[in-house]
Length: 291
Length: 223
Image (cartoon, rainbow over all chains, first blue to last red; front, side):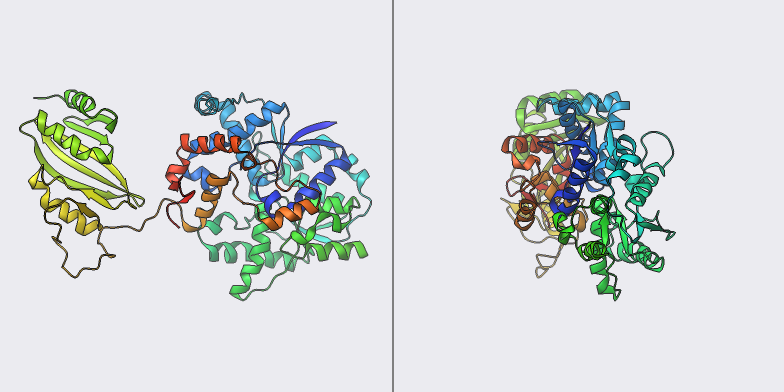
């Protein structure tokens, strides 16, 4: 059995725990053993803290990696933002001995040390590479007859090794296809949802980023958006509500890939607490169950 | 001619822990960072050692969250700058006019332009602003703000105080429990000792300082 330290991050367990519930159910069904990381902190988030103080960002992130190293397992993230922070920190610390020394100088004050042994992977990679498409396909008992648009999220394109930035997005595409969903092409898959620019300019973020995507997704005839990133999910869900202020009405369900997988594995929607979404994901799931 | 090293060595000896950092910034320039409470002690020490000491001027920088006061002195061919930083919430500048009468006008100018209250100044009236000038509108005073734009402030505050950027609500804890999950994931904030460690890292690095975090009030110094 494959074993990973599961890095839950902040947004999933605190804001959209239905993703955590679905992920745990998916891992159980496909035989992926995971352990939570006791005493972990925010990864920390890759925008504000990194720009404010890079050393603090590195040390805080390295502390999380050191905790995983103590448990002796590699680390798997469910969140794209956590993936970016932890992968980048890991790369810096593995290749820059001076940064590693400075980071460990702080960590040692608290009885911790990071030696660079941990591998950081996104859940998409673990499912695709470690479990494999065939094993996952075997679990699909209720193919989802819907048309979906994929939003990969910018951080999923990050590649610590190699230059194939579509490696993980393509894995996500294939995993989504396993659920029975039909994937529509809306031509703006690569465009950012606008979550980071909300920190600086709300109107730009909503109208020049999110709205463009929503228009194209709607025009492509998608029933839902499938995502892996909780921050993008928040932007899509809350953003649709906020766009009403600008006289624009959208109410597209935004479902996480793990939730879609869980539904296709036959997990009842009521067990996933999909009502915690701010978009009509529960209604969509109930509609699919009734089919 | 007294050397820069002699000046810093002397001040280190006189000020002890009140001196934070002293260095020669370039030829004949000495920068001495002191605790703000030690300003008068430092001026006294310079006067005692250097009879030809001349006060040049006082410059002030509004850094958003703090005021930096730079008292410049001429010491035997060298310029010695005493740098002291005070949080803007304090909003005072201790006068040195009784020690250096020439500081009278510049201290009043700083008070006028930055809205700083002078402590123990013999003539604390306006110097360049009119008598009816409003207290809350000072020409060179910036708002009490750190580096973070408004939307980023809750993120930084939550991260530093709770180790998590999305603090959990009682509603969500209940929902998690209903779903068979622990009320909170095993975050640092669930354990006091782990939280001490996390806060230690926030203090050891510069994140909390740069964000302008107040450890006593457990929030940012600005909204």
